[in-house]
Image 1 (cartoon, rainbow, N blue to C red):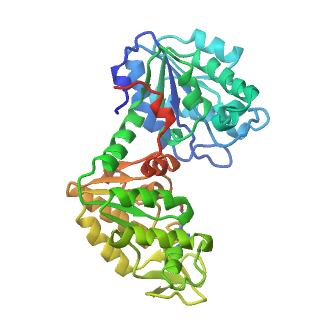
Image 2 (image 1 turned 45 degrees about the vertical axis):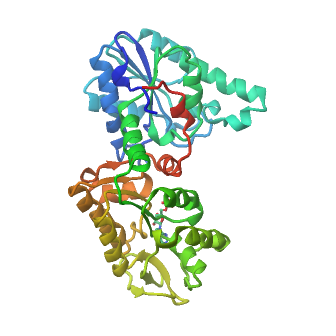
Image 3 (image 1 turned 30 degrees about the vertical axis):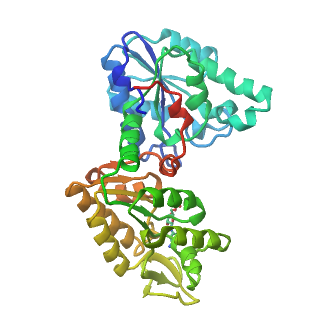
Length: 412
Ligand code: AMP
Protein backbone atom coordinates (compact mmCIF):
# COMPACT_ATOMS: atom_id res chain seq x y z
CA UNK A 1 0.00 0.00 0.00
CA UNK A 2 1.40 3.41 -0.96
CA UNK A 3 2.04 5.88 1.81
CA UNK A 4 0.72 9.43 1.98
CA UNK A 5 3.19 11.91 0.55
CA UNK A 6 4.18 15.30 1.90
CA UNK A 7 2.82 16.63 -1.41
CA UNK A 8 -0.70 15.94 -0.09
CA UNK A 9 -0.58 17.73 3.27
CA UNK A 10 -1.51 21.30 4.16
CA UNK A 11 1.73 22.84 5.45
CA UNK A 12 0.85 26.51 5.86
CA UNK A 13 1.80 27.75 9.32
CA UNK A 14 2.56 24.18 10.41
CA UNK A 15 5.59 22.97 12.38
CA UNK A 16 6.85 20.17 10.15
CA UNK A 17 9.07 17.71 12.01
CA UNK A 18 11.24 15.94 9.44
CA UNK A 19 13.49 12.93 10.18
CA UNK A 20 16.30 13.27 7.65
CA UNK A 21 19.49 11.26 7.17
CA UNK A 22 22.35 13.77 7.46
CA UNK A 23 24.80 11.05 8.47
CA UNK A 24 27.44 12.55 6.17
CA UNK A 25 31.08 11.44 5.89
CA UNK A 26 33.57 13.90 7.44
CA UNK A 27 37.36 14.20 7.47
CA UNK A 28 39.56 14.35 10.61
CA UNK A 29 38.85 18.07 11.00
CA UNK A 30 35.09 17.58 10.75
CA UNK A 31 34.77 18.99 7.21
CA UNK A 32 32.01 17.31 5.21
CA UNK A 33 33.58 15.26 2.40
CA UNK A 34 30.33 14.32 0.63
CA UNK A 35 27.09 16.28 1.06
CA UNK A 36 24.94 14.06 -1.16
CA UNK A 37 22.65 13.05 1.72
CA UNK A 38 21.94 16.70 2.54
CA UNK A 39 21.29 17.56 -1.11
CA UNK A 40 18.91 14.61 -1.42
CA UNK A 41 16.72 16.07 1.35
CA UNK A 42 16.45 19.50 -0.29
CA UNK A 43 13.24 18.85 -2.33
CA UNK A 44 11.28 17.98 0.84
CA UNK A 45 12.67 20.89 2.87
CA UNK A 46 12.17 23.35 0.02
CA UNK A 47 8.60 22.13 -0.47
CA UNK A 48 7.73 22.94 3.16
CA UNK A 49 9.30 26.39 2.88
CA UNK A 50 7.55 27.14 -0.43
CA UNK A 51 4.22 26.22 1.17
CA UNK A 52 4.57 28.46 4.22
CA UNK A 53 5.56 25.87 6.81
CA UNK A 54 8.31 25.77 9.45
CA UNK A 55 10.96 23.07 9.17
CA UNK A 56 12.29 21.24 12.23
CA UNK A 57 14.97 18.69 11.33
CA UNK A 58 16.23 15.72 13.30
CA UNK A 59 18.93 13.26 12.24
CA UNK A 60 21.62 10.95 13.54
CA UNK A 61 25.33 11.27 12.78
CA UNK A 62 27.81 8.48 13.45
CA UNK A 63 27.72 6.43 16.63
CA UNK A 64 28.26 8.70 19.67
CA UNK A 65 26.67 6.03 21.87
CA UNK A 66 24.92 8.30 24.28
CA UNK A 67 27.81 10.71 24.89
CA UNK A 68 26.88 14.38 24.61
CA UNK A 69 28.39 17.05 22.35
CA UNK A 70 30.70 18.25 25.09
CA UNK A 71 32.07 14.75 25.65
CA UNK A 72 32.53 14.02 21.94
CA UNK A 73 32.32 17.04 19.65
CA UNK A 74 33.10 14.89 16.58
CA UNK A 75 29.49 13.88 16.46
CA UNK A 76 27.79 17.26 16.55
CA UNK A 77 25.52 17.73 13.58
CA UNK A 78 26.15 21.50 13.46
CA UNK A 79 28.41 21.28 10.35
CA UNK A 80 25.57 19.58 8.46
CA UNK A 81 23.18 22.37 9.51
CA UNK A 82 25.68 24.94 8.20
CA UNK A 83 26.05 23.12 4.89
CA UNK A 84 22.28 22.93 4.56
CA UNK A 85 22.15 26.70 5.02
CA UNK A 86 24.65 27.16 2.18
CA UNK A 87 22.68 24.85 -0.10
CA UNK A 88 19.35 26.52 0.71
CA UNK A 89 20.84 30.00 0.47
CA UNK A 90 19.27 30.97 3.79
CA UNK A 91 20.30 30.66 7.45
CA UNK A 92 19.50 27.44 9.26
CA UNK A 93 19.01 27.80 13.01
CA UNK A 94 20.66 25.24 15.23
CA UNK A 95 19.68 23.91 18.64
CA UNK A 96 22.60 22.34 20.56
CA UNK A 97 20.04 20.11 22.26
CA UNK A 98 17.53 17.82 20.54
CA UNK A 99 15.07 17.97 23.46
CA UNK A 100 14.80 20.02 26.67
CA UNK A 101 14.40 23.76 27.37
CA UNK A 102 16.89 25.03 24.77
CA UNK A 103 15.26 23.02 21.98
CA UNK A 104 11.75 23.95 23.19
CA UNK A 105 12.61 27.66 23.10
CA UNK A 106 14.12 27.35 19.61
CA UNK A 107 11.00 25.58 18.32
CA UNK A 108 8.68 28.13 19.95
CA UNK A 109 10.57 31.04 18.34
CA UNK A 110 10.62 29.48 14.85
CA UNK A 111 8.61 31.39 12.26
CA UNK A 112 6.96 30.34 8.99
CA UNK A 113 9.57 29.87 6.26
CA UNK A 114 12.38 29.19 8.76
CA UNK A 115 14.49 26.09 9.32
CA UNK A 116 15.74 24.70 12.63
CA UNK A 117 18.08 21.73 13.01
CA UNK A 118 18.13 19.83 16.30
CA UNK A 119 21.37 18.30 17.62
CA UNK A 120 22.27 14.67 16.76
CA UNK A 121 19.54 12.44 18.18
CA UNK A 122 22.10 9.71 18.89
CA UNK A 123 23.58 11.86 21.67
CA UNK A 124 20.58 10.46 23.60
CA UNK A 125 20.68 6.81 24.62
CA UNK A 126 16.90 6.64 24.28
CA UNK A 127 17.16 7.01 20.50
CA UNK A 128 18.57 3.54 19.99
CA UNK A 129 16.77 1.55 22.65
CA UNK A 130 15.40 -1.47 20.84
CA UNK A 131 11.69 -2.20 21.21
CA UNK A 132 12.44 -5.87 21.87
CA UNK A 133 14.53 -4.82 24.92
CA UNK A 134 12.01 -2.19 26.06
CA UNK A 135 9.10 -4.65 25.86
CA UNK A 136 9.92 -6.36 29.14
CA UNK A 137 11.55 -3.41 30.86
CA UNK A 138 9.11 -0.61 31.85
CA UNK A 139 11.90 1.84 32.78
CA UNK A 140 13.59 1.42 29.39
CA UNK A 141 10.26 1.73 27.60
CA UNK A 142 9.47 4.95 29.47
CA UNK A 143 12.94 6.32 28.71
CA UNK A 144 12.43 5.79 24.99
CA UNK A 145 8.85 7.05 25.00
CA UNK A 146 9.55 10.14 27.08
CA UNK A 147 12.35 11.14 24.67
CA UNK A 148 10.01 10.52 21.73
CA UNK A 149 7.15 12.45 23.34
CA UNK A 150 9.35 15.54 23.66
CA UNK A 151 10.31 15.36 19.99
CA UNK A 152 6.73 14.58 18.93
CA UNK A 153 5.51 17.73 20.73
CA UNK A 154 7.62 19.84 18.32
CA UNK A 155 5.61 18.84 15.25
CA UNK A 156 2.14 19.36 13.80
CA UNK A 157 3.17 17.08 10.92
CA UNK A 158 5.68 14.19 10.94
CA UNK A 159 7.74 13.45 7.83
CA UNK A 160 9.99 10.44 7.31
CA UNK A 161 12.64 11.28 4.71
CA UNK A 162 15.43 9.04 6.07
CA UNK A 163 15.36 5.87 4.00
CA UNK A 164 18.76 4.68 5.29
CA UNK A 165 17.32 4.15 8.79
CA UNK A 166 13.82 2.95 7.83
CA UNK A 167 14.69 -0.62 8.84
CA UNK A 168 15.40 0.47 12.42
CA UNK A 169 13.05 1.00 15.36
CA UNK A 170 14.91 4.10 16.59
CA UNK A 171 12.88 6.60 18.63
CA UNK A 172 12.98 9.33 15.98
CA UNK A 173 11.96 6.83 13.28
CA UNK A 174 9.19 4.89 14.99
CA UNK A 175 8.37 6.00 18.53
CA UNK A 176 7.95 9.68 17.55
CA UNK A 177 5.28 9.00 14.88
CA UNK A 178 3.67 6.50 17.29
CA UNK A 179 3.26 9.43 19.71
CA UNK A 180 1.64 11.68 17.09
CA UNK A 181 -1.85 10.18 16.91
CA UNK A 182 -4.26 12.37 14.98
CA UNK A 183 -1.52 14.34 13.26
CA UNK A 184 -0.45 13.74 9.64
CA UNK A 185 2.47 11.31 9.34
CA UNK A 186 3.81 11.11 5.81
CA UNK A 187 6.77 10.21 3.60
CA UNK A 188 9.06 12.89 2.19
CA UNK A 189 10.01 12.93 -1.49
CA UNK A 190 13.20 10.93 -0.97
CA UNK A 191 11.55 8.03 0.86
CA UNK A 192 8.63 8.17 -1.58
CA UNK A 193 11.05 7.70 -4.49
CA UNK A 194 12.94 4.89 -2.74
CA UNK A 195 9.73 2.99 -1.98
CA UNK A 196 8.47 3.48 -5.53
CA UNK A 197 11.63 2.28 -7.32
CA UNK A 198 12.56 -0.53 -4.96
CA UNK A 199 8.92 -1.54 -4.46
CA UNK A 200 8.05 -1.57 -8.18
CA UNK A 201 11.26 -3.38 -9.10
CA UNK A 202 10.68 -6.10 -6.53
CA UNK A 203 6.93 -6.50 -6.48
CA UNK A 204 5.93 -5.58 -9.98
CA UNK A 205 9.01 -6.17 -12.15
CA UNK A 206 9.13 -6.04 -15.91
CA UNK A 207 10.65 -9.39 -16.90
CA UNK A 208 13.22 -10.74 -17.30
CA UNK A 209 14.18 -9.57 -13.81
CA UNK A 210 17.87 -10.06 -13.00
CA UNK A 211 19.43 -9.54 -9.57
CA UNK A 212 23.17 -9.16 -9.08
CA UNK A 213 24.56 -9.81 -5.61
CA UNK A 214 28.11 -9.29 -4.50
CA UNK A 215 29.97 -8.06 -1.44
CA UNK A 216 31.95 -9.71 1.22
CA UNK A 217 29.96 -12.22 3.20
CA UNK A 218 27.51 -14.87 2.10
CA UNK A 219 26.16 -14.83 5.66
CA UNK A 220 24.89 -11.26 5.17
CA UNK A 221 23.16 -12.17 1.94
CA UNK A 222 21.59 -15.62 2.49
CA UNK A 223 18.15 -14.20 3.23
CA UNK A 224 18.25 -11.80 0.28
CA UNK A 225 19.46 -14.49 -2.16
CA UNK A 226 16.64 -16.72 -1.02
CA UNK A 227 14.03 -13.97 -1.35
CA UNK A 228 15.30 -12.93 -4.78
CA UNK A 229 15.39 -16.49 -6.12
CA UNK A 230 11.62 -16.47 -5.62
CA UNK A 231 11.11 -13.19 -7.47
CA UNK A 232 13.82 -13.06 -10.15
CA UNK A 233 14.45 -14.90 -13.38
CA UNK A 234 18.21 -14.96 -12.79
CA UNK A 235 20.47 -14.20 -9.80
CA UNK A 236 24.12 -13.43 -10.60
CA UNK A 237 26.67 -13.91 -7.82
CA UNK A 238 29.98 -12.07 -7.46
CA UNK A 239 32.21 -10.66 -4.72
CA UNK A 240 33.90 -12.68 -2.01
CA UNK A 241 30.78 -14.71 -1.28
CA UNK A 242 31.34 -16.69 -4.48
CA UNK A 243 34.23 -18.55 -2.77
CA UNK A 244 31.97 -20.11 -0.17
CA UNK A 245 29.83 -21.27 -3.10
CA UNK A 246 32.99 -22.72 -4.69
CA UNK A 247 33.57 -24.80 -1.56
CA UNK A 248 29.93 -25.89 -1.70
CA UNK A 249 30.54 -27.12 -5.26
CA UNK A 250 33.62 -29.10 -4.18
CA UNK A 251 36.11 -26.62 -5.68
CA UNK A 252 39.20 -25.21 -3.96
CA UNK A 253 39.21 -21.51 -3.10
CA UNK A 254 42.94 -21.08 -2.28
CA UNK A 255 43.48 -18.28 0.23
CA UNK A 256 40.25 -16.48 -0.74
CA UNK A 257 37.90 -15.18 1.91
CA UNK A 258 35.49 -18.01 2.76
CA UNK A 259 32.96 -18.79 5.47
CA UNK A 260 33.37 -22.53 6.12
CA UNK A 261 30.40 -22.57 8.50
CA UNK A 262 28.14 -21.34 5.68
CA UNK A 263 29.02 -24.05 3.16
CA UNK A 264 25.89 -26.06 3.98
CA UNK A 265 23.74 -22.95 3.51
CA UNK A 266 25.45 -22.32 0.19
CA UNK A 267 24.72 -25.94 -0.87
CA UNK A 268 21.07 -25.43 0.02
CA UNK A 269 20.92 -22.21 -2.03
CA UNK A 270 22.56 -23.93 -5.00
CA UNK A 271 19.86 -26.61 -4.90
CA UNK A 272 17.10 -24.08 -4.45
CA UNK A 273 18.39 -21.86 -7.25
CA UNK A 274 19.16 -24.49 -9.87
CA UNK A 275 19.71 -22.80 -13.25
CA UNK A 276 18.53 -19.46 -11.92
CA UNK A 277 21.59 -19.01 -9.72
CA UNK A 278 24.69 -18.15 -11.76
CA UNK A 279 28.21 -18.27 -10.36
CA UNK A 280 31.40 -16.84 -11.88
CA UNK A 281 33.18 -19.13 -14.38
CA UNK A 282 36.54 -17.41 -13.83
CA UNK A 283 38.23 -15.44 -11.08
CA UNK A 284 41.01 -12.84 -11.04
CA UNK A 285 43.54 -13.94 -8.41
CA UNK A 286 46.73 -12.61 -6.86
CA UNK A 287 49.19 -13.50 -4.11
CA UNK A 288 48.09 -10.52 -2.04
CA UNK A 289 45.82 -7.52 -2.13
CA UNK A 290 47.98 -4.64 -3.38
CA UNK A 291 47.29 -1.97 -5.99
CA UNK A 292 48.79 -2.88 -9.36
CA UNK A 293 49.95 -6.38 -8.31
CA UNK A 294 50.40 -9.13 -10.96
CA UNK A 295 47.22 -11.17 -11.44
CA UNK A 296 46.31 -14.64 -12.72
CA UNK A 297 42.91 -15.51 -14.10
CA UNK A 298 41.75 -18.91 -12.89
CA UNK A 299 38.96 -21.26 -13.99
CA UNK A 300 38.03 -24.02 -11.55
CA UNK A 301 40.21 -24.67 -8.49
CA UNK A 302 42.14 -21.65 -7.13
CA UNK A 303 45.78 -22.63 -6.36
CA UNK A 304 46.73 -22.82 -2.67
CA UNK A 305 48.92 -19.69 -2.73
CA UNK A 306 46.40 -17.38 -4.44
CA UNK A 307 43.30 -15.41 -3.39
CA UNK A 308 40.42 -14.40 -5.64
CA UNK A 309 39.74 -10.66 -5.66
CA UNK A 310 37.46 -10.11 -8.68
CA UNK A 311 35.27 -11.85 -11.25
CA UNK A 312 37.14 -12.75 -14.44
CA UNK A 313 36.64 -11.52 -18.05
CA UNK A 314 34.62 -14.59 -19.16
CA UNK A 315 32.23 -14.08 -16.26
CA UNK A 316 31.94 -10.38 -17.13
CA UNK A 317 30.98 -11.31 -20.71
CA UNK A 318 28.43 -13.88 -19.56
CA UNK A 319 26.88 -11.53 -16.98
CA UNK A 320 26.80 -8.66 -19.50
CA UNK A 321 24.80 -10.83 -21.92
CA UNK A 322 22.28 -11.70 -19.23
CA UNK A 323 21.97 -8.04 -18.16
CA UNK A 324 21.55 -7.00 -21.81
CA UNK A 325 18.43 -9.18 -22.02
CA UNK A 326 16.89 -7.90 -18.77
CA UNK A 327 14.01 -5.44 -18.35
CA UNK A 328 14.60 -4.99 -14.62
CA UNK A 329 17.97 -5.19 -12.86
CA UNK A 330 18.63 -4.90 -9.11
CA UNK A 331 22.24 -4.80 -7.92
CA UNK A 332 23.64 -4.96 -4.39
CA UNK A 333 27.31 -5.48 -3.52
CA UNK A 334 30.52 -5.08 -5.56
CA UNK A 335 31.86 -7.90 -7.77
CA UNK A 336 35.39 -7.62 -6.38
CA UNK A 337 37.64 -5.48 -4.21
CA UNK A 338 36.79 -2.39 -6.28
CA UNK A 339 38.68 -0.12 -3.88
CA UNK A 340 41.99 -1.68 -5.03
CA UNK A 341 42.73 -1.60 -8.79
CA UNK A 342 43.07 -3.78 -10.85
CA UNK A 343 40.36 -5.62 -8.88
CA UNK A 344 37.84 -2.92 -9.77
CA UNK A 345 37.36 -4.08 -13.35
CA UNK A 346 34.52 -6.55 -12.75
CA UNK A 347 32.51 -4.07 -10.67
CA UNK A 348 32.94 -1.24 -13.20
CA UNK A 349 32.07 -3.53 -16.13
CA UNK A 350 28.83 -4.47 -14.38
CA UNK A 351 28.14 -0.79 -13.62
CA UNK A 352 28.63 -0.02 -17.31
CA UNK A 353 26.31 -2.90 -18.28
CA UNK A 354 23.61 -1.37 -16.06
CA UNK A 355 24.09 2.01 -17.73
CA UNK A 356 23.62 0.39 -21.15
CA UNK A 357 20.56 -1.50 -19.93
CA UNK A 358 19.07 1.78 -18.65
CA UNK A 359 19.71 3.48 -22.01
CA UNK A 360 17.62 0.83 -23.77
CA UNK A 361 14.75 1.29 -21.35
CA UNK A 362 15.35 -1.24 -18.56
CA UNK A 363 14.68 -0.25 -14.94
CA UNK A 364 17.95 -0.44 -13.03
CA UNK A 365 18.10 -0.12 -9.28
CA UNK A 366 21.23 -0.08 -7.17
CA UNK A 367 21.09 -0.92 -3.48
CA UNK A 368 23.09 1.54 -1.40
CA UNK A 369 26.34 0.90 0.40
CA UNK A 370 29.38 -0.21 -1.59
CA UNK A 371 27.70 -0.72 -4.97
CA UNK A 372 26.30 2.82 -4.69
CA UNK A 373 29.81 4.07 -3.82
CA UNK A 374 31.23 2.21 -6.83
CA UNK A 375 28.75 3.65 -9.31
CA UNK A 376 29.24 7.10 -7.79
CA UNK A 377 33.03 6.75 -8.11
CA UNK A 378 32.60 5.77 -11.77
CA UNK A 379 30.49 8.92 -12.29
CA UNK A 380 27.57 6.82 -13.56
CA UNK A 381 24.95 7.30 -10.85
CA UNK A 382 22.87 9.67 -13.01
CA UNK A 383 22.77 7.07 -15.79
CA UNK A 384 20.87 4.35 -13.95
CA UNK A 385 17.21 4.53 -12.88
CA UNK A 386 17.77 4.72 -9.13
CA UNK A 387 20.64 4.58 -6.65
CA UNK A 388 19.28 3.87 -3.19
CA UNK A 389 20.50 5.93 -0.24
CA UNK A 390 20.07 2.95 2.07
CA UNK A 391 22.69 0.19 2.41
CA UNK A 392 21.26 -2.06 5.12
CA UNK A 393 17.77 -0.69 4.50
CA UNK A 394 17.78 -1.55 0.79
CA UNK A 395 19.06 -5.04 1.56
CA UNK A 396 16.32 -5.63 4.13
CA UNK A 397 13.77 -4.22 1.70
CA UNK A 398 14.95 -6.71 -0.93
CA UNK A 399 14.60 -9.49 1.63
CA UNK A 400 10.96 -8.45 1.92
CA UNK A 401 11.21 -7.52 5.62
CA UNK A 402 8.48 -5.11 6.77
CA UNK A 403 9.61 -1.64 7.89
CA UNK A 404 7.64 -0.60 10.98
CA UNK A 405 8.87 2.99 10.59
CA UNK A 406 7.09 3.10 7.22
CA UNK A 407 4.05 1.03 8.18
CA UNK A 408 3.17 3.53 10.94
CA UNK A 409 2.77 6.34 8.39
CA UNK A 410 -0.62 7.36 6.88
CA UNK A 411 -1.92 5.51 3.83
CA UNK A 412 -2.18 7.48 0.57
P1 AMP B 1 29.51 -5.78 1.59
O1 AMP B 1 29.65 -4.79 2.69
O2 AMP B 1 29.12 -7.16 2.03
O3 AMP B 1 28.65 -5.28 0.44
O4 AMP B 1 30.99 -5.98 1.02
C1 AMP B 1 31.65 -4.98 0.36
C2 AMP B 1 33.11 -5.25 0.40
O5 AMP B 1 33.36 -6.51 -0.16
C3 AMP B 1 33.92 -4.26 -0.40
O6 AMP B 1 34.68 -3.48 0.47
C4 AMP B 1 34.80 -5.15 -1.28
O7 AMP B 1 36.13 -4.72 -1.28
C5 AMP B 1 34.68 -6.51 -0.63
N1 AMP B 1 34.93 -7.60 -1.57
C6 AMP B 1 34.37 -7.81 -2.75
N2 AMP B 1 34.92 -8.85 -3.38
C7 AMP B 1 35.90 -9.32 -2.57
C8 AMP B 1 36.85 -10.39 -2.67
N3 AMP B 1 36.88 -11.17 -3.74
N4 AMP B 1 37.69 -10.57 -1.63
C9 AMP B 1 37.65 -9.77 -0.56
N5 AMP B 1 36.77 -8.75 -0.41
C10 AMP B 1 35.91 -8.52 -1.41
